[in-house]
Each structure stands twice: as structure tokens, then as C-alpha cells.
Image 1 (cartoon, each protein chain N blue to C red):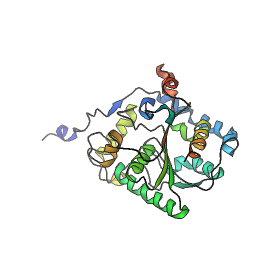
Image 2 (spheres, helix red, strand yellow; image 1 turned 120 degrees about the horizontal axis):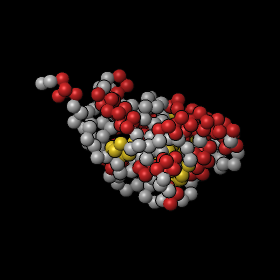
Image 3 (cartoon, rainbow over the protein chains, first blue to last red; image 1 turned 30 degrees about the vertical axis):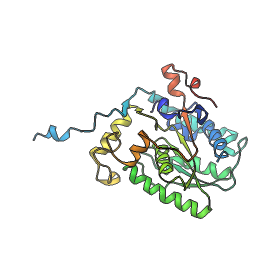
Image 4 (cartoon, rainbow over the protein chains, first blue to last red; image 1 turned 30 degrees about the horizontal axis):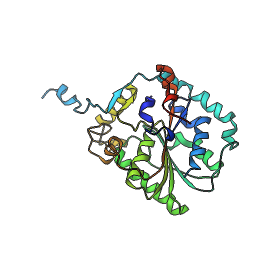
Length: 42
Length: 228
């Protein structure tokens, strides 16, 4: 639905890649794994 | 004046919104991805770090509502966070107005938990989250965007761009009651567009999750640009 180049931060350390559809990101195990890891960084 | 003259969209030409031939067929995989999630240990909270009651507000994407994030909401609760739906309704209205509604939820979550809020937004929901974090950094601890085209020009499938144009045509009515002729375009002078095109200094940590599916399709190696 959207190109990935529009969705990333300039600093690569702030980006995480998952392999899913655009709509499927919200029901994707890889996305959930990243969210869990990033939330602990707050 | 002819009817054709009335139908011309003065904001149709927009350098910040570019049609892109993204693989929309990939969206048909959604049911399989959902089933795979249900079968994954991650879904049941195994193998991932847990929270300690911190507030997390989940924000739906363009055209969607909180219903689209039910799985994410309950998963966050299972792994120890205190999730909140955004309560923004269907995400079709003026982004500045919707950010105002989101702020009400964020302030309620902060009041109830006594902690700054984590925002997890999908697509346009991530852009709204970034907008809120830039305007109210004292309320937000972190922003995580999921496939949110916040950077430079938005390159999106023509279906999405047509949907935005349709909303502009019907602006001022129904769910799009606050949509104005320049909404969802780089021509708008609103705070949301300013924060997307030229954000000032960030005070809040933010992270971007993106899908490499488009990169596979186009033959471009996304992983060369990022690291885990």
C-alpha cells in the first residue's frame, strides 16, 4: 500500500524490518516481537 | 460556470503525495498472517519481554477504526501492559482534528496510570502519533510506527490516493465533517502536515517498523538500508 522508503527513519538504528503485508503488520508475529522489544526501551 | 469546472480538484497536483505501484495483491495474505500469529508462541506471550503496567495507546490507520487493532490490544494486555484504544472513531477526518481526539485519550491514560504514554500507530495512525508526540512531548514516552509513510513524500498505491481525494470531495459531511479541500495533501497549512514535512527537534524516542514486502517486489534490498 505504501513504499517502505517513506516509512523509515534516517538513522538505521531506529528501524526494524518485518516481512508482512501492509494491513497484516497489525497481526504479524514479527511485528509483535519488535514492539515488545522496543517498548522495553522507554 | 460549467459543472466540469466545479469538479476540478485544485489540490490534485501534490509533490508530497506520489502514486506508487506497490504490490496491493500482497494484502490478500492478511488471513494467513493472522492465522500464523495465532500459532506463534509470541501471541501467547512466550519469548518476548513483558511490561509492568505501562500505558500503551494503539492508533488505527487510514479508513480504519480501533476494531482493526483488537488483536494488538489484547496481546499488549497479555504481556503486561495497560493498553488503550485510541477512541478516535474511524480514521477519515482531518488529521489535526483526530490528533485532538487522540490527545484526550493520551491524557486520560496518563492520568489513570501516572505515566507518560507509549504510542503504537499503524500507517496514518503512526503519523498521528508522531504529530502528537511533537506537539505534546511531555505526555509521550515513545512512538512506534508500523508502516507509516512519514518521511518526505508519501509514495502510496493509487487506491489510497483516490480514497483521500474522495474524502476531500465529501469533506464537511458525515465522518469527514472537518475535512477541508487541502486535507490529506502537502498543500495544507495545518500542524500535522508541517510536522510530517518539516518536523522540528524530536524530544521523544521513536522507532519505525516497515514491511520489506515492497522491497522484494521491486528488487530493492531494504535490509541494506537498515539494521535490526
